[in-house]
Length: 137
View 1 (spheres, one colour):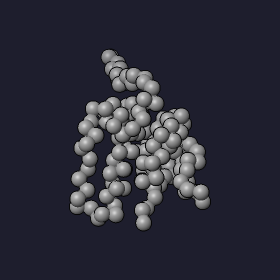
View 2 (cartoon, one colour):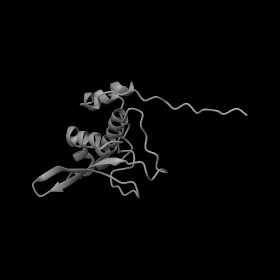
View 3 (cartoon, helix red, strand yellow):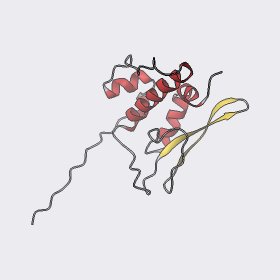
View 4 (cartoon, helix red, strand yellow):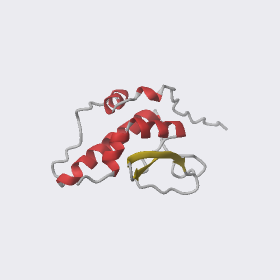
């Protein structure tokens, strides 16, 4: 009897702090940062949200460096930035994870495998999160 060994994709470490902009994330993913979703058919007030959601997905993918969440594995921690709208303005609150159940208002793609990455993204990409979470008047 032969036993097959499943090869896992080796994830090469890199310093995620080198991703300082959407353009850096695109470079890491070998994407052209000028190619954005065509939002011409979407209501005007939703266009910015769709584009920034795309940008955040690319940023998370680049920083995660091949890691993807396994939503069937409740023991796998999934970290995401926790941001709040404060009376003094928009601000970063904390990093959190959840392994027992998932609750999110920002989308399941926007998580990382470490608290350190979630903290970095919240601080480095605060402007993108602000555009993503807050509705413009």
